[in-house]
Length: 266
Image 1: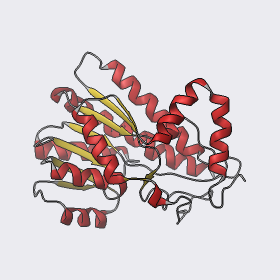
Image 2 (image 1 turned 45 degrees about the vertical axis):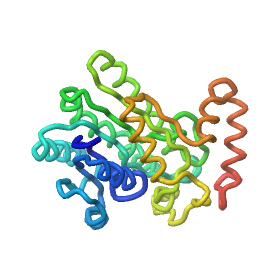
Image 3 (image 1 turned 90 degrees about the horizontal axis):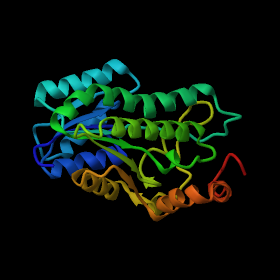
């Protein structure tokens, strides 16, 4: 990763922050994007490299995504890796959720990936680089209470798969990452049925895979030019069993998610 130009969205917290620190440690040139400018400034103070770019970016906004790519190329001259990590979650029954919540999930998780990938693609083709999407096991198996999240991740997985196939002869690597449950801030800021922040996590974060571990695995997969990466034993088992026993897994996933504190579908 040394001297590689890497863009990371959602860089101010969770997996994005861990990726930023790991890639900085390995000597990469970083273009880091997030909505929260104060958190970007705090991240800047934690990084060793001095030649990084920090750009306030809301990936729901097409023009801001275009600006992120343009400023990165103006500063560094190329793009080697585009990591689409920005994302939000939600928890509510579909029968109760405000449709605006689903729009926000699709706009951030799916359209944010599409926008950044579209504008970065010409430069990634020039460098024979890597396009990365941090998706979820929820993009392979629908999670009850997470209609918008699962829908956006299913769409993201399909989008990345098509881009991979279309460029199979063009030297572009496309990596879809499905971390499984990871300790991060995403559940604290997940949207409730009315669009307000959930404010607390329903999971025991200390029992989950750390964002730092996920970051190391993602960097390793990029270096090996893998096309798919599914993490955690539960995540791998869920994806595998769902291929052969989908109805059984429907019940298993329901029972597992129903055990969450304050589950909306007990």
